[in-house]
Length: 90
Image (cartoon, rainbow, N blue to C red):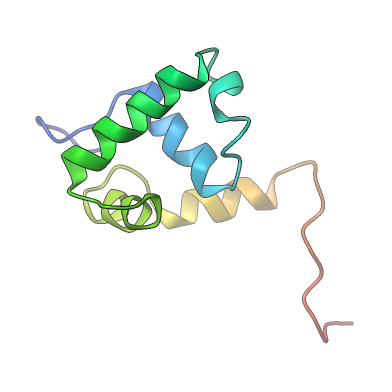
């Protein structure tokens, strides 16, 4: 997370991480907040980042230092769930 007025809270950081992992439906439950609260958090993050869409928020969040793309990759590698096989890999 970055410092200064453009930083995100721990809860916002976790919300971004979950969304980048594709867990949009489970994000609110994982954070122990209502769906409406999670949607409000996302709206505020999009506004602060100047991102018109959730996809743009992911890109802007990395530029602003709110998350690092390597964090998501390492989380997926350490996940208990198997990754999808790479086509053509044996």
